[in-house]
Every structure is written in structure tokens, then in C-alpha cells.
Image: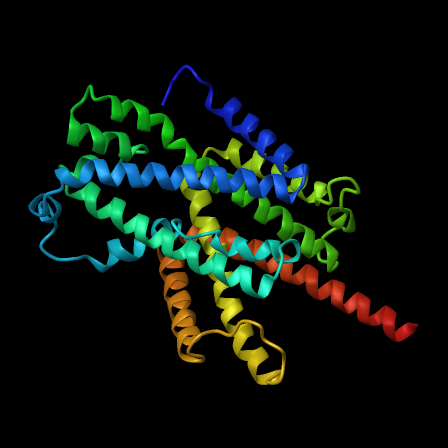
Amino acid sequence: MNPAIPIMGTALATYVVFITINLFGIKQSARFSLIVTILSVLELVVFLIIILPCYDNDRFLANNPPSVEPGGVFAGIPFAMWFFVAIEGVAMVAEEVKNPHKTIPRGYISSILTLVILALGVMILSGGVGDWRQLSNLDHPLPETLTMALGKNNAWSKVFASLGLFGLIASFHCNTISYSRQIYALAREGYLPKILSQISLKYHTPHWALIAGGLVGFLAIFTGTTNEIIILSVLGAVVMYLISMLSLFVLRKKEPGLHRPFKAPLYPYVPAVALILSVVCLLAIVYYNRWLSLIFFGGLGISLLAFVLKYIIFTSKKVIN
């Protein structure tokens, strides 16, 4: 919001700060995430309370096209899913929480419900305050919504220009926790270099995984292509959801007697719906982003090839021994 602050330098400094916080242990990271998340939720609740009296249903329904274009809906899927991408990061800390069979499902359910309620509240109320078309291409719609509701010089509009950072900080910090645990888990199983599975003796954190993921983030920052990064991220998430649902069906069939502290509700119907939705989302994203999809699946193919080669080499050594 302040043009005098260098964007690139600020982004790099932010990465360094969050990686440093995570290096000091999961308790410190979790406390920081909790505080920032509470502040971001309170910020949105206050925002909704302020604009609620200014909401008008006629304004919300005005300026809409006479018919919904399916192409526009499907093209917007990556950005709609961005509201919920990385929520699966809750499971990444399963080894670092007490009673994970209870706390992880609670974390998932409460997080998703919170996101759904706040996303719908912000979308509906913001759209009914003024001409929503003025918000559609803005990177900072909340302060502009308050300007529509309360006037250009209102203090709340200026305050929210800074308070809006809480949501970004919470999301960014949680992503830092998630990527480090994912890299650590892959390295521990031998899919990435073993050095990435090393744990700090003093703080018990995957320090090399944190640093390696941060370096990848640095490279992404220098590309300057936020939209493309979002689409690639969502592509990865959808493929993961699809594989997870398929794995669930396979595991239920192969291991029917396996101990399951948390069972998927209404199996197999809810997982089947999730699988179908994942396929639809994947096809839509690929259709409207073919070049990015080619890059993504090319990288995925190389990773799979490396996995197959590693498996063949490992099997050969085992047979020889």
C-alpha cells in the first residue's frame, strides 16, 4: 500500500523472519500462528459488522450478467480454491501434537467452517455495499469497500489498509510450517536428499527443510508472476486431493481391518463426491491454463521417473544382496 516500501526487499525479509521463527520450534511457531490468525479473524468480523448496516440486496444483485457463463465459472476455479488451499497443512504436524487422532480432525473441521463462513460473509456483504465491479480488479478490496460504505476520508478505511496484513501473515506462516514438514517427510522416506530430513538437536525442527523450501520461495518471488504461481499451487493441490481419494478407496479395499481412529463420514459417498469434484476442477484448470499445466505435469513426470528409477535401483540391490 505504501509505494515507498520496496516490494522485493520486503518479501525477502518476510521470508527470513518466518523461517527464523519456525527454526525455534513448533511451540513458538504455533503460538505465533494462533495469535496472528485470531487477529485476522477478529479483523474480518469487525469489517463485517461495520459494513452490515450499509448492505443493500438490490446493489448486490445489480450489474449481473443475464446468464451465468460456464466458461467464466470454470476459469475462476483456481482463484476460488485459493481460499482453501493449504488447509491440508493441518495434517503436517500430526507427529508434533497431542492426540492427533482427535486434534487433527478438529483442526480440519473448525478451519474449514471458519473459512467458509468468513469467505461467504465478505463476498456477499462487500458486493452489496456499492458497485462490486469497482472491487473486481483490486488487490486491496476491503479498504475500498469501507470507502464505499463510510466515505473516502473515514479512519476505518485507512486502518484496514494495514490490518489486512494479518490474514496474509497468518496464511504465509502456516504455509511455511506445512512446506517444511512435507519436505522433511519426503526426505525421511528417501524421496529427497537425506540432509533435508535432519532435525535440529536443540529445537527439534527440520531446519534444512525450512531453509530449502525458503530458497524455492525466493525463486518464486523473483518471477513476479503471482497469478501463475497461484494456478500452479492449486494444480498441485487438486492432484493431491485426487490421489488422496483414490488412495482411500484402495486402502479400504486392501486393508479393511486397519485401525482407523478417524473414518471418512458416509463412506463411500462423501469421498466419491470429493473425487468427482477434484476431477472436474483438474479438467477445468488444465483447459484454461494449458501452458502452465504442461509445465506442471512435465515436472510431475520427471519426479515420477526419478521415483521409478530409484525403486528399480533399490530393488536390484536388494536382489543382489
